[in-house]
Image (cartoon, rainbow, N blue to C red):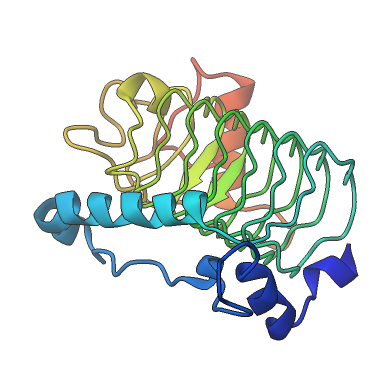
Length: 259
């Protein structure tokens, strides 16, 4: 796997030209940079239609890209160290990736549909434009993951860590985010509904679609302020203590109390 994930630029250029008539090597379509996206919620309001279209085109380019793609469909990669590997455009549908280390892995445009990634560590992984439809990511650590423009329809993300995950323009229709930990995310335009949000835990740092607000129905259990993620001398975070209190007794939990 390490050899596959560390292929040279020349090798990847040759792969990109596979079955492209009259071309021996070309730039990999999976190296295509992400479109210029709005930086603030206000910009999203102004440019949301154009941004959505650009991300749709980006995602389409990933899906339709000609050339050779690494085929690891239905392979057993459980518990492997895949951190930092270049798996852009890789076919990983149905793969068993439970508990694997995918920190900072490059998976732009990869096909991870129906992949089993329960408990995998995907911190700061790059999955822009990837297909994660029906993927099983229960309990996965997606802190800081880059998933702009990704397809997450019907993804199973129960109990997932999503602190600072970037998901602008992603499609999360029917995704299951029950007990997921949301913080410092812009989720104003990803297709999540109030019914989905209320099953998860978040705080005032999450940018929500209008008219949802932390602390107001149906998100009464969300603190209105931003909870600290820096650990104290006992290794605990303010966010973690609040999350644990909510899970232990949702009815007794007070989002504005100190824990």
